[in-house]
Amino acid sequence: MDLVLIADTHVPARARDLPAPLWSAIDAADVVVHAGDWVSPELLDRFEERSRRLLAVRGNNDGPELRRRLPEVARTTLGGLRFAVVHETGGRDGRERRADAAYPDTDVLVFGHSHIPWDTVSPRGLRLLNPGSPTDRRRQPFCTYLTARVADGALSAVDLHRLERR
Image (cartoon, rainbow, N blue to C red):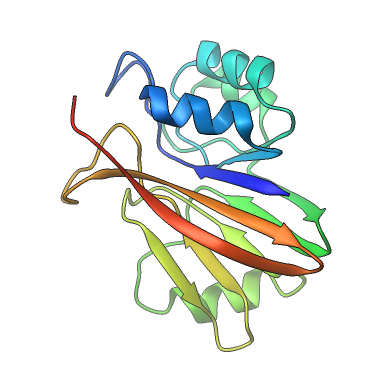
């Protein structure tokens, strides 16, 4: 099962649209995971139309319609792994221990908010992934998103993709 992990799209506030390579990855993925800050309900509509399966949450920049349509936390099991998705996890210091306490029944936690790519493992073995942002790199050298593969209860081929500036 091939996954695309994305967060902090901020369309149309930070970009008019997502980069073409990301749309291609979304079209090809079995599951698309979005960790919030869509900004536009129309972008959610496009994801729902183009994704085979969408697992998504709202972020702090999402207005009333997105808050009505999306949960704060989303959970599912994919290929034997228990996933949770949330927008914010707090500051970087102590993140892994906080996540262990907040998501004890989770194998992989996908989050956003910081626009900073993140890939760590907590003391109890929880994998924490932040795909960065495909449209607003902030202090990062590139805009980014993640792809991964899930099979037989394992997460593999976790790759950070850099997007060229437009």
